[in-house]
Amino acid sequence: MTIKNALITLASTSILAGSGYAMAAPGQDAGPYLGVGTGFSSLENDREDVDNFIESGGRNYEIDDEGNSWKGFVGYQFNPYFSSEVFYADLGKTRLEGNDIANTELKSNAYGISVVGQLPITQWFTAFAKAGMAQWETEVDGNLGDARVDLRDNDGTDPVYGLGAQLNFAPFLVRAEYERYDFDSDYKIDSFSASVGWRF
Image (cartoon, rainbow, N blue to C red; front, side):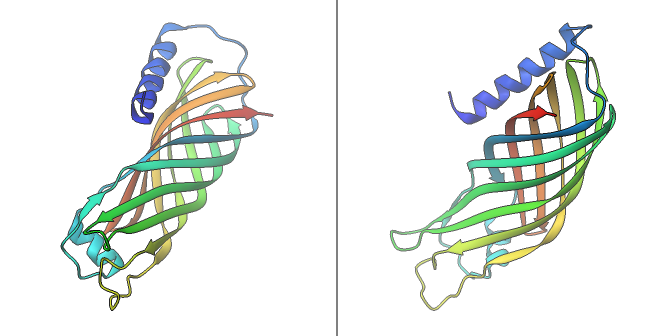
């Protein structure tokens, strides 16, 4: 089973669990939590945007934009409806595939803080949406076959937002989520992940 299929299965299971249980173990309204997750990322831009992002001026390559990613987060739940989180995300690689000597990799990571709005459907099941800011960096390794071209690393501070669903098995939690890392107009990364966590 691929990571993508596993995430789809997890999300479907979460929805069924949330709709199928009216009663659950006692919930936890406030307190700290942490978690770690894995998944995949994909690029939402075309080749011309990527050229602008790294200032390559190149055209003769294809984009392989789906790679494995992972993340870690630490949060505090203030009440059943509101939390805040700090996070770090390794967003994997975007590969520019040209000829044998013109393969280039863009490696991206980000860290930042988000506010999380939560909708407790049952004590077992919570839907949520988030918005925040991320300090990000993209490193470029390669030259697209032209050593005279100095491809540009990039970094900045930009919005991140997303939505997801969470199963609550106090003290454990399991979540599936989608996030958009809006680096700039030329480079946006979508991340799909499944995470496990622990409440204190």
